[in-house]
Length: 341
Ligand SMILES: Nc1nc2c(c(=O)[nH]1)N[C@H]1C(S)=C(S)[C@@H](COP(=O)(O)O)O[C@H]1N2
Ligand SMILES: [Mo]
Image (cartoon, rainbow, N blue to C red):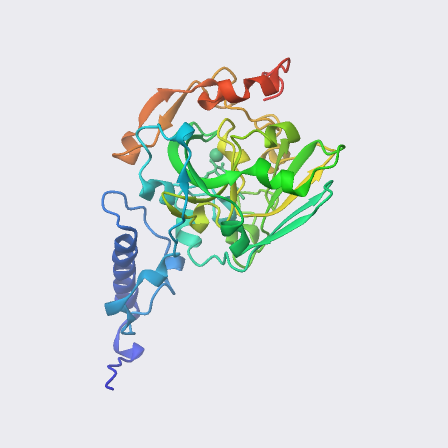
């Protein structure tokens, strides 16, 4: 077999960089089926994505992008009407995941090689039956359903996302919480080698890692709370929190913690990551509330990221509890939502 080889020294460094950047960009966009939206990829990700000297380039470049698999699921008929959905490419490329950097394009750029298998999710603390689930079990132990949910970031942008997953309550019941369990604490993977934001306070936005979130047990047991393992019919991409992440649709997005390795039942309220860094701006509850502004901006309306130009996204009024008040308002009876934001 004849293999055509070129010596690296045949090409000047400047040419090499340009060609590499150009080709990688084209290949990555193609792999994602992208056209209009093209967030520039960071160069350090492009390096190593593929080798311009190998023949690989001509055949298959899909290994540059994390591979998502089809997930068998049913549609939950209660949560099927939400239009328009945010297009898949935007959900995959406009992210908050500070472990990979603070820019909206950083998680997509820097998470494609993230290892989700092997994985271990542990449910422990005040439970009678601690549980450990591996990667395969996360995807096969529970009946997976599709639910279309609104997602509202505390930064006042929003999306409509077709999640795949199962109710957190199902898993918690399996673990049999003890009667003194009052809260649920969630923790993201800590792995600075894979998550660049964990190895530098500058890249990671000065947050303390691992990222921690928490819910009151009665909130956690509400059937709306989803453990998501996929979206748009396929397993999650790393930038969206693969292999498993929380989705709490009536709370600001930062509560929906990604890439979870630990769920601990406790009798004390967990201090969540954002509350820890700025308690006057981010509370424990973080219920979407158009009447309680963030100290630095209004929460009365939001920029909806739908089909069309990302930067011409439409504004719409923010709904109390993000539109889920019928399901969850009773959880907060008698609570001063201005004080417990
Ligand atoms: N571990 C971890 N989870 C996280 C974050 C993060 O930085 N780290 N960002 C949160 C924020 S602020 C939002 S808005 C959502 C965004 O989810 P998405 O990128 O899948 O849309 O993830 C949340 N979960
Ligand atoms: Mo957010």
